Amino acid sequence: MKFFIGDKEEQLTKRLQGGDKTALKDFYSLYGGYLTGVCSRYISDDEDVKDVFQDALINIFSHIKDFKYRGAGSLQAWSTRITVNQSLNFLRGKNKLETTALVRDVADETEGMDPETEDISPEVLHRLVRELPTGYRTIFNLYVFENKSHKEIAEILGIKIDSSCSQFSRAKNLLAKMITDYRKNKNNPR
Amino acid sequence: MKEETRKQMQQKMAAYKETAPEVSWAAMEKALAAGSTVSTPQAFMWRRWIAVAAAVLLIAGAGLLTLLRNDVEPDYKAEILADIQLEEEQPAIKTETEAETELQPKAKTLPKTKTLPRKKTLPETEHLPQTEPQPQTETQTQANPQPQTEPLPAETTMKTQDTEPIEFIGAGEEIRAKSSRKLIASVYVSSLMNGSANTFASGRLMYYCAAPMGASDQMLFDNNSPALSPEKKVKEKGSHRQPVRFGLSLRYPLGGRVSIDGGLSYSLLVSTIHSTTNGMTFDSQQKLNYIGIPVRVNYDLLKGNRFNLYTSAGGSVEKMVKGRRDDRKIYIRPLQYTMTCAAGAELRLNPVSLYVEPGLSYHFKNGCHIPTYYNDKPLGFDLSIGLRFNLE
Image 1 (cartoon, chains in turn brown, green):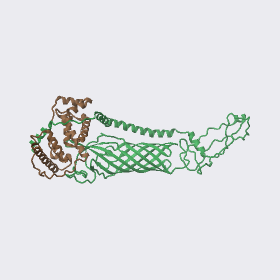
Image 2: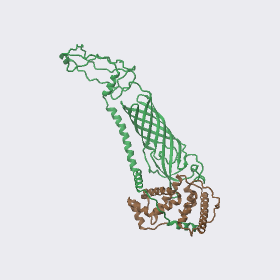
Image 3: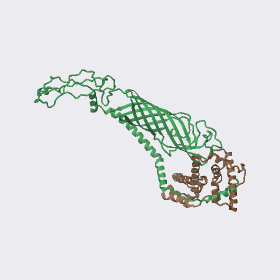
Image 4: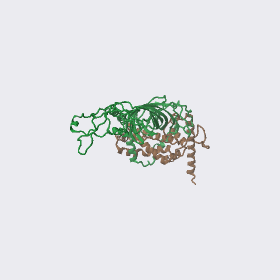
């Protein structure tokens, strides 16, 4: 999950911490696309993604002096955490994490099928994740892409561990169903 | 989910990029610049010291002016005389010999008194030499005509245009032709200037000092989610904006230089709370609304025709009536007690007066550990600006 740019990243870090204004645009060029992808995985509305992304950049540049470079990929990882935080703050502030109505066709089991994604392109997978209900999507992203345990997710979101498990299970099963439907539509276009 | 599936999905999305949205670099540089100018603690310290120095200078200046002013201002004298009906004396026409032997009257000065009783009496005046009034002729002129008055007794009650007699008061003090026991209403706005955004408090464990409902797994996803459980502990730091207070008060003079104020106030405390748990930091917007009852005693240091200087001391008790952090309610049951002292300058522009009051305030701990401006910055500088109206 990391772009390895080695020495370039360290130089960029030094320039940002030194107040070099051209470094801001270099950062944007290097990481802007990736961070936008992270942001849009949490937020489904494109206009909101634009606002949150800009706020995340401001946050990154404001606190860059607090960052300690710890090797290749550390700047990207740190920036990703800030972007995820900004996205979650946005969702909490806008009260977007509304009650997720149960989807009847999805099995409400803790153990269900895992989505099979070998033949699914990143763009399609991203789009399908984005189509999940907000609550499911948030927990799914935190578990799968941010590597958080259910205990950590429960602490972050202020919910019980069991709730994180059950919400994730429903998200996983729903995504699996969506992938199956995608394959059907792809093989049998109307 | 199997770990293999998770890793597969992570690797698939590791290189995923989207077209980054256009960014307004001008707005971003402005936001970064604004953040840097506001957030430096050194800037806060300088503002605080400048404000405290201004308050000290104001109080010291008021005291110094009171001590230095010994002469009655001509304006006061004219104002006094305008209200008094004096018997007019014909100016004396003197011969040269009489003028030479005449004692020169000394400049009249009014004795100092420190009280302002209703009874009006004239102070002792210099006895002027008596001469018989000379008839005035065209040919007789006097180079320096000396107006003469009959010697006045030590205390003489003089009639004035008003029914109430007037007392001449000492240097630097205005005559109160009519004693004032009227109520004075004030409206004001004040700002606590002890800190602003990005002034971080030390991290502390969080719990709500109220009776919250227990956290439930629906809390995050429920629009009517209750406050967090008191057992939930998260490290928090607060970035507090300068609180703003609006108020109405009534001032009642107690006599002399002392008066008492009482009224109602509304305060808004806005903060950004940085919550950190398990390496993730979340920002929440916290807004607390307080209603308070301030009471204080004022003492006039200097009172002129249009300009007053005074000091005041007192306190207030406030109750938080509404609080939210993002979409969650906050309950703070304990009352907030504050002690204040201030110096004020007032400019009278009839029928209203404009006043400014720099001062200090101290917010007592009330046992609540929610990061608020009151808890994190108990001692601070306060600046009030307002209008006063005489209620006749």
